[in-house]
Length: 157
Image (cartoon, rainbow, N blue to C red; front, side, top):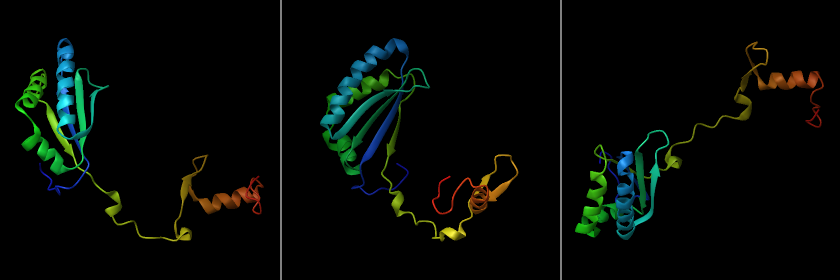
């Protein structure tokens, strides 16, 4: 793992990509049923197997654990020799070495908001219908009132 993370951070999404030839798909599906049972028994709260719609033979195993610590416990404390054998069986059916990613939680509300600018300071521009260049929204409003498209008192034409 490249990124430092708090052990209590969660939920954590684990995603593994497998490349399975068509003739091995039935065996892979059977193996993944056992992997699913193992993941859920060892701490996953959700589990799914998905077929990539853009790449023939590519499958994504995705599961969720409550925290990074829970995921570490899956590996270090909860997996049995049988669980490891099930996982190895699924990996062996892949043409390429399966790739695994750990998706950690992030909170966009921790980012400072943009500085406040009163509405009248914000110049909203848009392209005119005839391509005559950018004009302000206030100018469009003046033109619409002048042409009686909008009534200033009601706001509707």
